[in-house]
Picture (cartoon, rainbow, N blue to C red):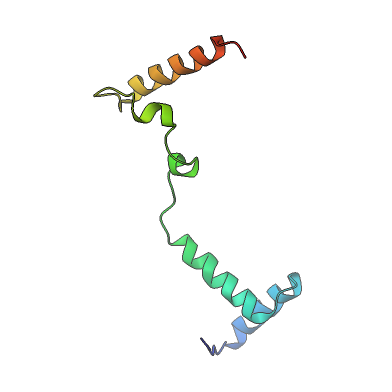
Length: 88
């Protein structure tokens, strides 16, 4: 989609300076800047989402009330101790 942008004198040097720092053409630079700005407005994924979700071992084995922090810590600790004690 064609887009025309008119820059004032104070802003005109900005894209030129950015182009000097990269090997991009103007269109690529503008697309990148728009995409980066758009991403800033998006909700950030949680740590669990960043790690790919909850470990499968916990999804089907948790009892009622296990979403509480102390319960999760205890279950995780038990799981890690069990893995450490298993022969490699």
